Image (cartoon, rainbow over all chains, first blue to last red; front, side, top):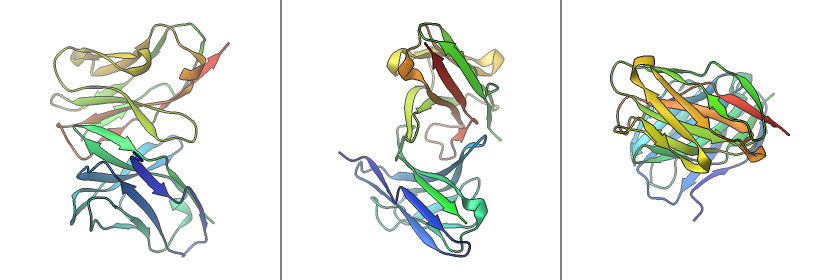
Length: 110
Length: 114
C-alpha cells in the first residue's frame, strides 16, 4: 500500500519555466490538498479538492493551478516559476479529519 | 480566522527527561486539534488528535496532549524522551470536523542530547 506518492522528489527550475508536481493516492480518499513548507512559516495550504472535478483555493494559491479529473490524482502546476516558489511541497489526503502526507517534493527556482 | 501559535522555535532536552511542547490556538468555537511530527526529509505523521470528549488524549509513541479551553492551549507532553523523538513537531487546528482549511503552527524543532 503506497499511500500518497509524490513525484519528483527534487527539481531545479529556472525562473519562468513551467512544471507539474504529481500526486497520486491509492487510499480512495475524496479530499486531497497541496501545502508548501517554508522555514519559520509552517505549512500553508495552496489548493485543495473535495472530490473529482472540484477544487478550491487555500491560503496561498497565487502562481499555482490544480485540477482533479480522477479520485487518485491531484497535480499541482506552476505555469511560470518564480524564486519565491522555492519550497518543499507536500500533497496530503484526508480521512475522518486526519491528513495523510506524501514525502514531499523539494523545488528550487533559480 | 483560526490561527495557531507555537511559541518555542527550538527546544533541547536530555534523553530520558520529560517534554512539553506548547501550542495555543485562536478560534471562537470548539476547535479540532492535531499534533503532527516530521522527521528530517519526511512527510508529516499524525501523533494524536482531539475532536471532543476527554480533554486528555493519548497518541502514538507515548505522547499525550491536553486540551484546555480556558487557556486556548493544546500542549504536547511525553514523560521520558528517546533519541528517536528528535524531529519537528507541528500543532494544527481545524474549525469543524473535516474542515478543509487545516491551519498549522510554525513548528517546534526538538533536539535530544545524550
